[in-house]
Image (tube, rainbow, N blue to C red; front, side, top):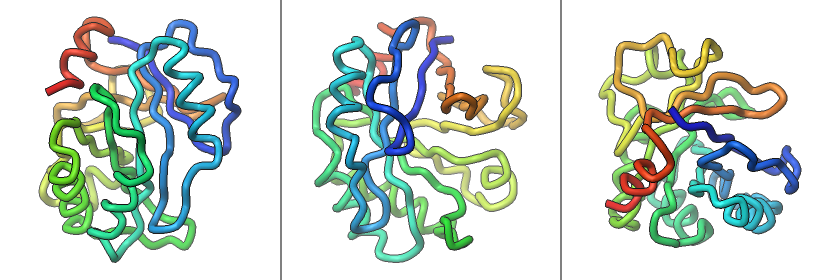
Length: 184
């Protein structure tokens, strides 16, 4: 397994990339928010030689508009990964399973040369998801031992802690295997 982190505007732009193979960066949320630190965080990750991914925090409604907004703001570079973050919003609402599926399909349609993943937590995966559709890969949050999420499904990335920041492992032999996979 290889190691990575994910960051948003809540984290610094000077995170360490030592020992990391990938960094996911929050790009957008809904149809109006753009991470103000995204450009600096992308530079930091790229300068550190990491595979870069971008994620969109999904709100219910206006799915096609959210997908278009996300791809208009996330940089478009070959080998970058894209993901949708499906969980409770700050208002305790959540996109439906169907909306999550439509968002992934729309992003895949808009960016056909990029891998698109689903990020969600164990509770959503087990109790809200009814289709098991995760696009090109499941990125599961379950705060247990790295690489041992408590689900039966195949997973691509496992977020295993949020302290001191979101740490992840990916089910790849090495960074080269991830880079090959990231460029379909």
